[in-house]
Image 1 (cartoon, rainbow over the protein chains, first blue to last red):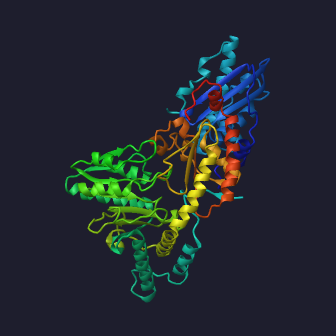
Image 2 (image 1 turned 30 degrees about the vertical axis):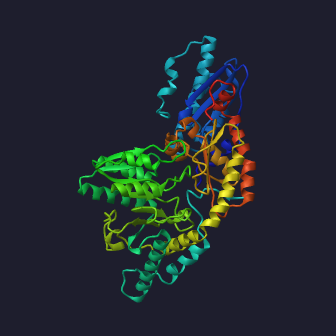
Image 3 (image 1 turned 90 degrees about the vertical axis):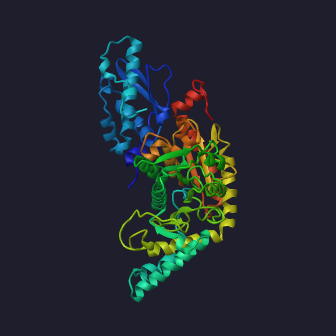
Length: 143
Length: 395
């Protein structure tokens, strides 16, 4: 049995949306290099729709694959929909992740939320703070 | 091309070992405890294997106990020494911070049973000094256990001198020689070793078999209770094919040790020199006192598991001390013990060679690895922060 599903390996070896967006409308970075993974998501937002998204990730195969899949899933979607993306949906879209790698999908969800929060903050858009849990307190990273 | 550069994890079996084993599966399949001729053929093979292994370690056949591998041997050595010590009221054990988990977890278990454990530092080069061992020994110390060579960073410990110190102080000395056996000269008498563990699959022998050497007079405690096999110290029908294969592989490795080491050392040094060309990289472990096949690097700004998976796609089998390869959030305790910060330890790569690796394979790895490192750095936010000066380079 392989370590990862074919989908994970596909997104890991051919990651979609790698890169940065200059003058991005929202940027989110989560994770900790001490724990071995950091994800950074850049959003371009036009009329409340994510017109472009890029990522940079320092991490294992499943972290890179989760970033790639998550960016695919929110591209072209309204910001409100992107906020609803759950880590489970990312993991399912990848045909599953090993149990001890689920935190990689959590990071992807958190990175997107952090980028949206940054967009809201920059534009003075009001939001419910409960929608954005503190990365420091997520289960994925207990350091 | 498939390059197997993970020989510290396990090795491919040699033809010598396989050929030695086959008759003990097909023809001489008996149980050595059986009195009939089929059983006695197996008993004879067991005795010959014991004599062969003993000779290759400079030991007496009576001092050799066959086990299921290095982990069992480590467990039994530590527990035996602890039980012997406890009888005399000595309940202090000394080891090092970067031992294999078979040692560290057994020590942890003993600590829960009331023993006190001191783990010595191993410094940046991964080497513990005999002076530090001497200074740590107390009147109630019952055992010093220091690995012969480290499995991750390849550093070789001054075993004979540490053994000397222990002998002078009257303390038992055990060494986990799993990475050393068959690769480095071992003579338990001349190196003052009281107990030693080894595992067959690290020198082209079969998996699931190992040895615990215990100097005559050291009474072992059983880990596995049952029949009277192994002088009553390790129950269970002996793994005759495995034991015979191990003896053949060990003898083969010891016979060709000098030429194998010369070949591997040359390849190792070429690989190290080539990989050092990668900016912000560093070798882990001592460059001089180092296993002939061990190459271990940290590459700043990337994570080891993704590096391994991409190398695997290129046909290179390696290993890493990153947290993601261990299934925990903590990177390798060995890399932390030699002072690598966690951020850097996550980006480690171990390439462990054997005598069958070729110069063409080294050249291929030197062509491929820098590109993979650069590719992962190109998508790493950590690397970008380092390059932009937002974070300080550590390497």
